[in-house]
Length: 225
Image 1: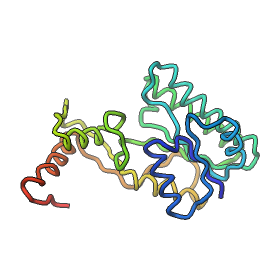
Image 2: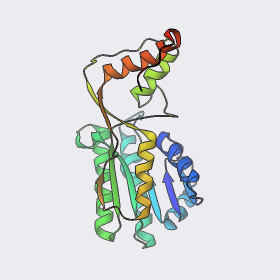
Image 3: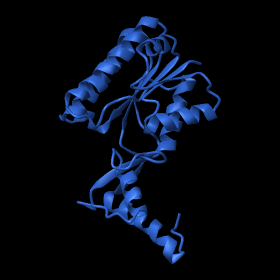
Image 4: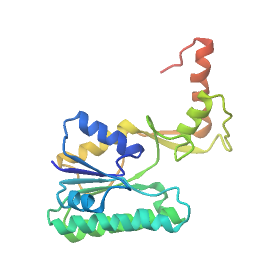
């Protein structure tokens, strides 16, 4: 099975590629920003399944949202349409796709392109609007407050919690990867998907829990787990 992962060196992509390898998938083409265009095109033409994780969420200017989220998605689905094989595609979107900010609009446009591809070609499509994802290899001070809190607390750097009661939904990276890999067996119906295991909590509770983990090194008391 020829699998393509875009954004393969990002937080989700890195974890997914490792789990695919552990499960015996040995033909995984990894596409990154510096991947030669010829390699990317051929990989997509040969693809049996595409995990489209690449995207822009911290650009220098808003125009990069369109280029990295909408335009690159169009590049991917145009190549898949060319191969005529009804290649399934999974799209990494965001809960912000329902909002009117520049990032959310670009993600909504990417979703629309993928839905059109599925309708026009009959290919299976799977769209995930991920909430806050946390876990190994997530960068602090980037796009996960959990990673930032962990980094700061571990290094005795003050954390700022503006609203401790602010609700937040968390998804652990391994649960997310399990969900994505389950798509490969071809039994899932097209459409919007969710990771089955999610945690509803508040920003304050997360901060308190992480502080407790740090304090346990001094108190020698293990938290209830």
